[in-house]
Length: 568
Image (cartoon, rainbow, N blue to C red; front, side):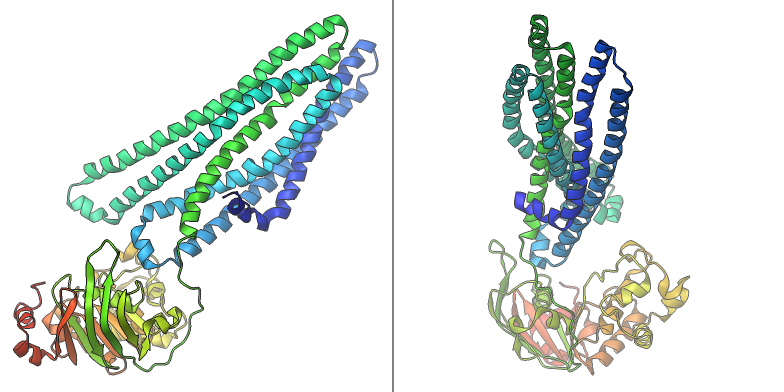
């Protein structure tokens, strides 16, 4: 984990070295002040001029402050750069994960890793490591100066510091464990809150505000409790550090006083030594704080690494494909969503020839939507063969496969942004004429004319300013602009009124003359004119044919048709 942490530092090492050197110069200036104070005391005693020692002391103060400020700025600037790099790297990984892995994760926890955990890296990589190196130099410098004044007093100081340092070392693993639990608890709180926000209207409509407030509040209390554990162990480490310096001060005062009384030590040397002793407080405190932050950073790095270690889809540039429609073949396909989950496809076999309209029908849970998920390779099937365009789907480069497909999900998601951005989301390079044609084909003209800024009107979070039917038509237009060789429509007309449904069916029929259209249907009107209908039940295919053929030959289809496919 330490190597992983340092990997984030590598791009910024030059700036960090510069900041560290400035901090070191500031430390040297600070180390000179107790010695200059000794000269001032000696000048008082001998009656010499105070101008030189006081001038030197003033220069040390000004130079130390200015140089330290410059070093701190460089450290903070580098810290922000480290956070930016960590967030970009983590977001890049998140958006390239496989759908199967993301489905097992919680969005709120993922947001916590991108925001909170990466922020902790800044503290550990700047204050925790780099500034601790400067503190170590200052500590060594102070010890060297103290050794030059009196070795006996130095020995007394070191004995006290070493004993307490050992106790602090025993505390550090506990801080790390507590910090890891605290960050997990914050992530869990984010996940619970995200759940409520994603279903905000449902929460309101169900009168479940108080219940959800209680759930989120309980998660917040767990995060608080874990944070208190971190605070307890961190405070204990800080108290131990403070106690070490105080005990050392008392010991040095007692021993040093006796040595001054015996004439073995000058009073000015004792004063300078005590000043150096208090100069040990900041570097020792920084080292302890750095150790604490290192434990926090290691805990954060562990959570970030958990995401980075997940397998990701290959990085590939978008590719252009020809416009020829492709066929689809499922041959004895077996699939389940996990080893501990029931089988969803159990020997699914059917064929879709290139071009034309093919409909998938069947009760809920028959495995219809899973067909689309497997075609998009959101999941990998465990048995059998899937071919697209005559090629095994696993032989297709993923970017090329998805560039050949247009996919309209059942809930037709619309992203926050303008209407234009949503329409061009899957095909940002289409011409204005192609965009206008897709708008006309999906009957979005009236919507564009009604919006105050036309295509450049913001549609709100998740398209909240659009109706369900408008969101569905936007999703269809987005898919058509991709010029797919295979268009996948998951109940594309479910949220349309009768007039717009009829118009959209005309659009689908027109598109089916240019490409292959595979539609999951729950309405009789969607499938009556399909070239072929695949009837699915309990993870298998029970019949294939046209509407007229299936009404006479298949009992399940006849029942579904009689109830307008509402039986599912």
